[in-house]
Amino acid sequence: MSEYNRASVIRYYRKQRNMTQEELAEGICDTYTLSRYENGTLNPSEENYQRIMNKLEMSEETILFNLQTEDVNIAKVRNRLLWLFERGDYQGAENEIEEIISKNQLPLMYVENRQFLYRIRLVVENNSGKLDLVNYILSLEKLLRESFKDYDSEKFVNKYFYTENELLILNNLAIAYGEAGKYETACRIFSSVIQQMEKVSYMDGYKPYYLLMVNYANILGLHQQYDESIEMCRKGISWLLKWEKGNCLYNFIYNIGWNYIEKSKRFSGEESLRLRKIGLLYIWEAYELCELYPERKENLEHIKKYFEKNQIIHF
Image (cartoon, rainbow, N blue to C red; front, side, top):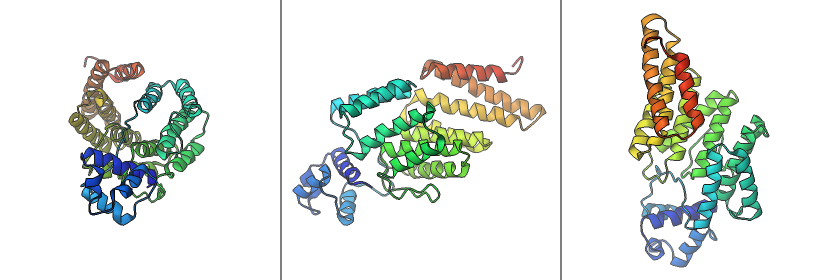
């Protein structure tokens, strides 16, 4: 973990616990030293770091998500770029990144800012054909190792804390490995991180976990692991309902329907028809939810076309 990450972790969770620096430092170090820990000018020893985490009641099963900023202007810059990126305006996102860097709106001295900006740039370059898959994977791994130095795709071991950026980079890496035909590597990353996240005792955002689950379900389905994919989707639905994020439900529901329909092709007669009917019910429900929460118009059209392609006459 980078020094800046540790500084952010201590500062963030101290504020979450409504503790003063004096209260947290008591019995561990002096207040001035803690202040230096929090602003990143001094890296705490392993012993002091563990003592601080214990005092903050942070267990080894806790994963860190998004680190909020108190700077309104920085939040606006991040949100503007994310809005362009997530709606698929890649040219707009590229232009925004160049402006952010040229105006130093997100100082690149901090690893969180570099990972935030460069991850989006790499995804945009890959999706637009400017970066081939091999170099895309290598670039993502290099970016991840700036804070996750022990990362190894072949011997993947979870780290103590994850930032939101690290989780999103891992999500992109797993997808890329799947596209490169390295199914086992992709599943190793997805399953390991998701299992770790199931132990989480505190969470500050739903998006990374949602993306990891939905993309893991996708890759399982595409490799004909239909039942496993459906199970992952059901977990995702339960988790989103807990977070009251109804706008994302349609993705999991659509995937369940898709899995039933694709699975039906393994059978014939009544069993094939039964599975297809179940699948179509899920697809239609996904369409209605997507219409209610129109994340992207193209998704709505895609769901409609898939339903029409697979619908049963007189059903």
